Amino acid sequence: MSKETADLSPTPWQMIRSVRSYLGRLNVSLAGEISEVETKSGARYWLYESAKSAPADGFPLVVHLHGAAVGWSWVRRDIHWMAQAQEKAVTAGKSKPMVIVAPLDPTKFSMWVDGKSEVTNAATMVMKDILPDVESAHPIAKDRANRHVHGFSMGGFGAASLGLKYQQAFSTVTIMDGAMHDWGTITKSRPKIAATQFGDDEAYFDQWSPWQLVQQADLSKTQFFVVEGLMESFNRRFADHIRGLGGQAVSLSPNCLHDLRCLTQAHGEDAFTFMSGSLD
Image (cartoon, rainbow, N blue to C red; front, side, top):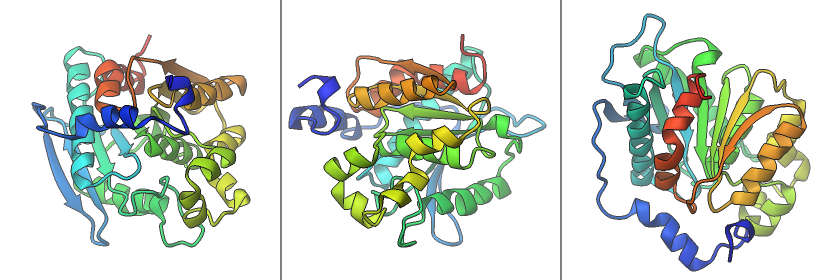
């Protein structure tokens, strides 16, 4: 099966190869520090802070949203891989030092949106609980030009959704092999999510769908960086959709499957360069 046809039905071998990065020893050396944090309400997140001194106006902030079925230790790997790419980009003079925040979705299948039943309000958790908690404890830049949202797999859907729904809060959206579902694909391949998070309600899904939100957004204010992996056609179609609406989307296709470590090693530095506004 090719990558083009794997969006809805990856082979077992493709999936095994895709999760290999989450198994075995985490071999990442960093100058900065990663810590685990819990808010007063119990929301959990990993936080990376550069070893560099904070600029006068604070560090730029990146919010990373993880993929489906992922636990706490796997999110820790995500932020280590991202931090490694960030430090390489800083050393190369391509990026500003940034704070990276990686929240945990305790349900593992929220798509990073607020559920119709209000049982899983993942977007509200990120925007109203975790971000204020980060801002209260760390020197973070306040302007939207220095705010970025980044996501892998399910988190790619969430990054696009939050980046467009809360357009005043983020200037860029980075999608790493995002599960960029529309109503037809999510009901076919993820019927449980369609039922539990969206109440089997297409109209409610459309309130959070990147495909719908991008049509309502001011695309002069938000730029997109899309890296394709196993879900190649999902991501290519979404990038083309943005460009068809007159928006800006940089899209790249490395030789990676659904593997954030591979995607980040290939284009993580480019992603941070893009966020810093200096990607050629």
